[in-house]
Image 1 (cartoon, rainbow, N blue to C red):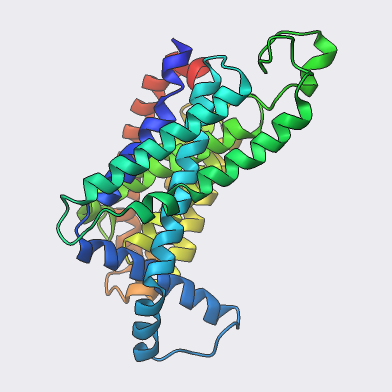
Image 2 (cartoon, rainbow, N blue to C red):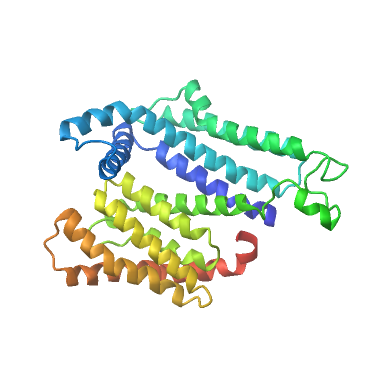
Length: 333
């Protein structure tokens, strides 16, 4: 059973990639421009550039659109590759076959992704894009290959990296699911789910009266510390793609991070893990709405509306999610 459950993170990332690729060209361009504008604002804030005029920002968005988009593709397929490596690790293949099989799966999905884009308005599928998408996976494979070659012969006569061996030899085996890779995969999968849920329900995910369903994931630090950076990155990416104001990108994402950290601290009580995200967002987001968007509503009123949305998302949906995952805790986390 564990072998099949290990594919869940990979399937989540595949679904996220499919969703992004299903967006028409104009929507995809707007997402890329939102990321570029956020990067330019950050560059201004830290003093890397002078203050840019709206015309300069527009020109730079056009100039940086392709590099930003290709970098995003390389990153998402690199994350997919990590999840595939994690899944195939459970099948106890010889390490060379493990690396080759994982790379083959990632490249094959990159091919289907380009084929998919042929049927999306304004998008195109190109062989060169398959090569670009696979760059991150190839680099990860190359690094692991080097590590494997150096450790070859220390993990068992059959050439596998999963041979039991002597207890004193276990520390020399190829990095397995108990290493940092497992937490990286978990965090990436959680971030991907957060982004997909936020963008899929975009009309109700932003604004003074919001019900961000993805906030239910803020209870996941109850199971694993990887959920803390996972929900933070998911929120940050969602705010960037959603065209949020710069203050919202920064302080809205920090509110989610604070809530996730608090949930991790309260992990000994499953009912208390919902409180920190509710409190952090209720206290911070209304001020973000006031100063980032110029909302004319009273702060106390926005605290009520934002708090109500958080109670529904984290307090109710989050607890339902936690209860559904609890029986599979050992297999998933």
